[in-house]
Length: 321
Image (tube, rainbow, N blue to C red):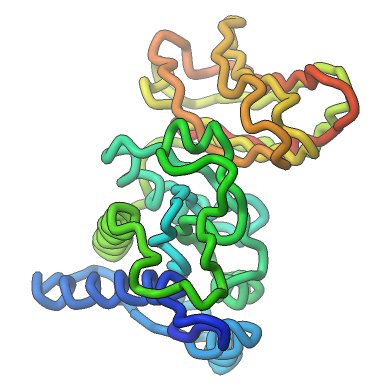
């Protein structure tokens, strides 16, 4: 299932929130029809009402499904705000979501990697319509270019735009009009939606490559170094040149953190070096050229808290071969 929401708030016209997601989804639906796509799996497009009033439309829909009908829904992808004027490129994190959500996350990350656009993982909690499906145990994923949150200097360096400014200064405001859309972000996300729909509806197997995860919590005390291991087995040969490293670290000041991937032979690959300033948490996927490393063995995520006052926790991390 692929969905956006149609409504906005009383205070604003609702063009980015969520005219952007709704328009992109409509365009992709029209393209599916024009291309005479013959999928192996059924595609269901939909646009929800009353999202802003508490996910009313999506919750009603999910609750109206019988157990048999729910079981037929293999995945739900949400597109809520994908044209923010100071955009980030966020993919919904599968951490804490129903089993199967990781496949959706990777399918949505793949087209941005092809475009050369780095992405970050984000957890939007219960703020959009995917929550109704996740609560019913249905795998979920989505794309997002940001709302009232502030773009960091590190994000501005990799994505462009203005550091210290909201992704969408007109979020839920009267200025959310037709000029409040970044056309490049809308175009990139629309292409990613099309890629995901073609891939998920015509593929008979999930994306290639085994995935390993350590979901165990590891506390990060102040001014300390901690590690979390993943034992990799059953993989032939070396690791790939584009090894995906997913990181979910909760921390009250991510600018304190130095994060490294340590290969089985002790080689160290830096993922994050005290970037992001005073922003909370580090939830992202990194790509590491690990082609010179034997895949099998114990890999470790090493996290060092390099400054005083703030603490955190490794919530989960993963390796996608």
